[in-house]
Length: 136
Image (cartoon, rainbow, N blue to C red; front, top):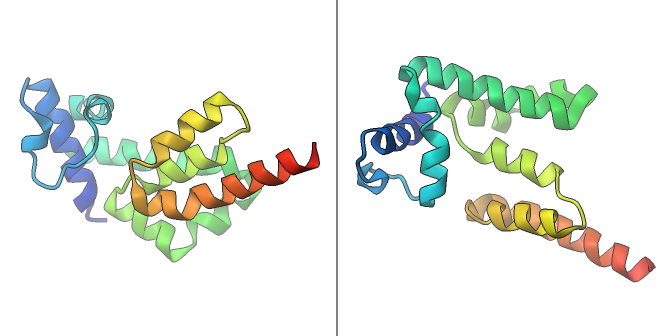
């Protein structure tokens, strides 16, 4: 596990704690509120924070996929996301929580912060919303 992507996130959170601009961290392109969220992880050393990040992601997989959790953990792209510390699993978990309400729309807007994930996840939910509206 190398945690390359997570090290960028951790440094951005650490910059917030030090009162510096998180956008001074190379390759950090997320919105400012996300840097404040990441500052929680920057309260501990990077390796401990990375372990916590992995546990958070595994916890989200267990919560949203329950019995099918093992299928997802053993899926090679998910193993890569875990080992590099990317945020995609967080967005996938949020997408699982999308409902046909204003909070679902808010989560959908949050997912667009990672355009690669949004292009895959949001069309499925839009199709589901349209089908639901057509049945009424």
